[in-house]
Length: 275
Image (cartoon, rainbow, N blue to C red; front, side, top):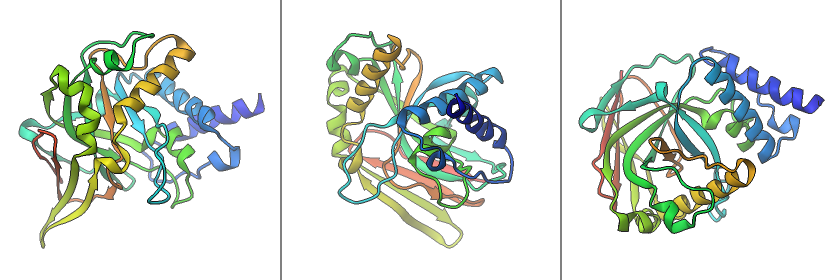
């Protein structure tokens, strides 16, 4: 009972800290949180947000931080996306004003659209057919914790540090490409560039095979796990699924333009200017 109370208190602390300049002391290590308990903190944070009027727009995969080059990919956790944090970039170009009290980060991601809701007992092939579109996007992250003392469990508790999702033009997926999209990702590359007054430079490059070659299969595993717990899929028709983790997030500042380019997937580049 005491431990449950501490989990609730942690969720309330994260919620109360949003919009403030002060940074939180991460508590996952002190509380000894495992994956299930971290998810409980996140679900409580989600409930608090819904009580304030937040409307669910989809889910996001929360990947653990890579600790070594040969680290095997573990099953991600599922975070939340909200209507108020989504932005669609017209003509794949947009501008953002920095209004956060804390430093912000940028991370490229792919966003899949769900055309229909998966059934509880369906197989992988049928599950993959539910995703009918894909878009290139960048996620704006806000880390609420002090320095680098946080661990992966804290990141899950804080919804993967999600602040905003800027989406480019969505492309329709053919029925064939839906079933082989993991293979496309595995052979694709992502480049992140920053343009400043003194010129442009590449600040990130990654191959999909590094950590993301089974992303949609991981989504299926998360679907199965949620069905076992609640008999319902976490994925819903009309919602989105964001899959990041291509490369480490980068700090952003005013006056910069961030350009994300993906090769091997037919998507236009995305340009985001920070004002």
